[in-house]
Image (tube, rainbow, N blue to C red; front, side):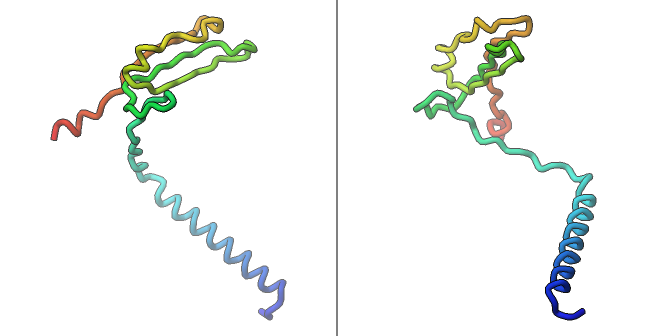
Length: 113
């Protein structure tokens, strides 16, 4: 093939097609592999200027002010800030309203070694 702009463009397109085909084939081969486990870093308290580890997840689900759907607000809080927490959107209470404080499960596997 002569060295022309059209020839170089065709070679580049062909190379790109081969690369995409190779990527698809590799993805299909890996399709049955398990995803690697996601390691979460320890969460810190959501409150500003607090660097304590979070001990609780506080969840509040309430009706949006416009009435067009629910809003979920989550905050990871340390023990001291969780004690100060209370429902804040009582104007948006509806049938599926939720205010819940859940302890964050600690990783016990490190303690067992």
